[in-house]
Length: 612
Ligand code: GDP
Image 1: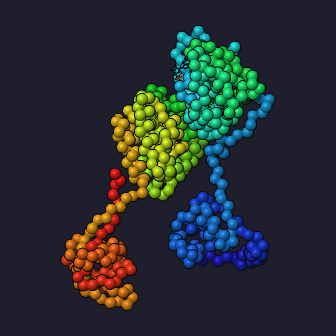
Image 2: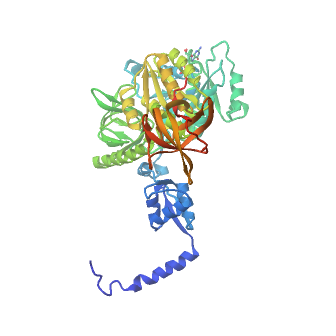
Image 3: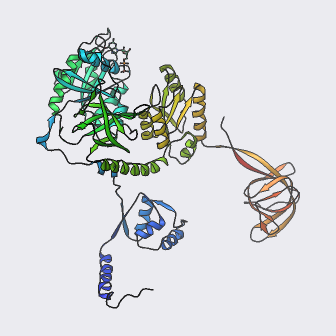
């Protein structure tokens, strides 16, 4: 043992403060900081106590715990309160958020940048047609000859100014883009068909745009159609605080036809006008930051990421990171298929040179050095792994649906459907929705035609949904992402198989049905009196078996005189688990001791049977 040199540990330093602490404790209540979940041992440590003390106290209150038993924050709070200790919840630091935090650019460095626009609205109201029409009519003659690239976004030129359109319509993409809180969009064009009016997804789109604080421009589409009623659409939208400027409101409405091209120019000019009011700016003279719109693994070229530059300028040769991947920009291709050397704010480009395929929605950051880029990716990887471990515990899986239900964790069963043709999507959707029962509601949160994409997996992961694919397959990136994130993807080629699978899972979710199963017969041959338990029936097992904890019916002649639990099963003096045919045993019944020699005991148990 090491001796402490005299004088060094002169109590002066220790004893006095201890006294002070004691005095202080009397006056002030102690507060500890604890996480969402912790073991009794960890709690005891934070409370500066011995775990056994806590365990003893809990035991006396009827709770059996070990040092390794896990308790929730609320339970821990209650325990601590018994010792006059208050608890505070540990605030989790989002490492990634911290990593990505940066100072605002100075006002004088800011320059006007093009608006980034997305198109939202109800299905079939013409989002895709509108995007196509805008693209077609606004590429210059020279560009039109080139190969246009689908890179998640494209820019159009209007009176010498640019507008960037995100070319995936719909708000799922839009929501995924907001994953890291970075808004990709400045203006949302809300497409409403003049012959159909406000529909459910119109309302959803409005809510999404409002939540993201994105400016809405309304495009009333299909005005070429006979049934078009522009005023009705305007009227309906007033219920959602979208009031046209000519009615005294502040929302721009433009009447268009994606079919004839009418009003498109007007729409583009209105977007520019709105952009002017928003005063959209960015500093182009700094290291770039952007958002990954889409990414994939290209056989020949390696990981390819479509990126929207948001700040600064991205150059060939820049060191970059995006989520868990890093690298150096080897090449950049714009939406017209042209190789470019740099990309400025609001410009979409396809980039080559990342080590891996990043997820859509990740923030792309340009760095000073390769090491810095790598360190960013590494931090992300570690953090992401932790989050995944936590998350995976919660993930939905068709196989454990029943368990989740039993634990009361599930009242809604979310599904995402993908099929090869729209007809199948609808058929499947209708059939699956019908499977809802009293206990669980089946919800199709997203459906569509085509392969299962990363965006589907993101949505499934965020909403704890199972993905059902009918005659489609997941894209390679989506598949690996699903594996990572524990998202259950089920593929079927026959509709009824898909329905059967979901139905089976749901049936498991219902409270189990039990059925009696007779396991043996026993004859009472002798009665022993035991003061402590009442009468014991000395018996002989005629057939089958009698087991501890089984149920028994006692028959005397044709009459049933008891039906209830077997309280104890003994062979000689020992408690046993079971006694087989041909052996003797001693039986005590729960709440009945009027057995007589000659009584026949029918032993049975309850087994769970599948529902029909
Ligand atoms: P999305 O689901 O919102 O992307 O809608 P689509 O762009 O796929 O359009 C749905 C249908 O409406 C298609 O058959 C289009 O041809 C049609 N459509 C779209 N815009 C117009 C329009 O302005 N006028 C007419 N008559 N039909 C349109």
